[in-house]
Amino acid sequence: MLDISLIIPANNEEAQIGACLESAIRNSRGKFKEILVIDNASTDRTAAIARSYQGVRVICEPRKGLTRARQCGFDNATGDILAYIDADTRLPENWVDVVEQTFATRADAVSLSGSARYFDADGWERFALLLGWWLSAPLAYRFTGYMIFGAHFAARRTALANIGGFNQSIDFYGEDTDLARRLATQGKTIFRMDFFIYTSARRFQNEGIMRAFFLYGMNFIWPVLFSRPFTTSYRDIRVSPLAKSDRR
Image (cartoon, rainbow, N blue to C red; front, side):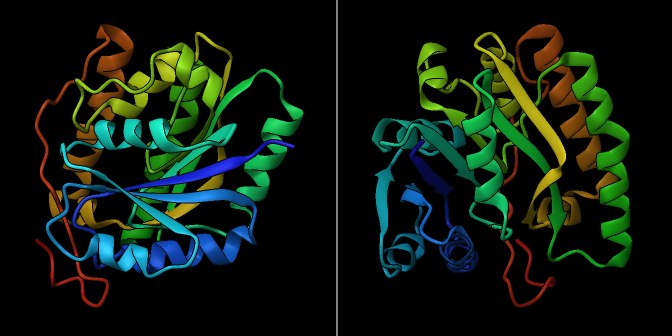
């Protein structure tokens, strides 16, 4: 039986971390060995809210950066399988079951990831984003043979250790493709369109859908071709769970 650790990097996510943890605790039905929230240089109440949930361990990573937070999770988690989700996601009911079954039955699998559904998008946005996923992800995965969507994935601890963990020279864009490319040297990186997580559409709403697709697309292509991201800068985007107009 493989132990699964859930790791949630969080920077200033007081508006989202509660709902994220509630869904993770409810829909995992006790199957996670541990739940770690990596407080990544937050200046708000993220850590305090996370600590209020029973069984959740909060670990401080004072150096801001997504890959630094992911590596902190790797360094502190104890599971055989390390599952990562973003702090603005909601875990579906069968998510942990798919992770459990995949790694129990596929000895060659080193990672599992999938697509997204958007809980705060309107009807048109949902249609455009789902269409974008179906037009790009299956073809990209077939072409490269590897793919990870950073908002939710699980990986074998041994495989992560063998590749030296997360590439902390990458701050944001392209870090998941870089990870998938390196993990593919250890075994099979599985990507499934029917394995999804609910997440916020806030970056698409703030950047614009076409611009966000362009940035994500180029930052998939560049690590594949040149082993580095296309974009080295990014904007922090936070949104209130109560109103789309409260974007910053």
